[in-house]
Amino acid sequence: MKHHEQFPLVPMVRGEGAWLYDADGRRYLDAISSWWVNLFGHANRRDQ
Image (cartoon, rainbow, N blue to C red; front, side):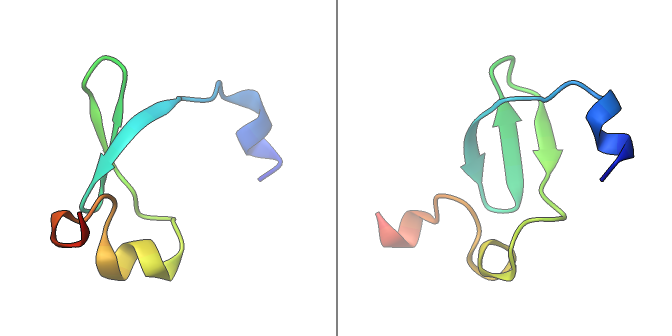
């Protein structure tokens, strides 16, 4: 984590399944979130 301080933060505006999206629409695989998100995903449509 000490090396992480050297990189700028990338704000995420939404999530879908295992993917996170920035304001420009680029998607990032969320491979380090909690195991609840890895099991159920971000913004699972079945729950909405």
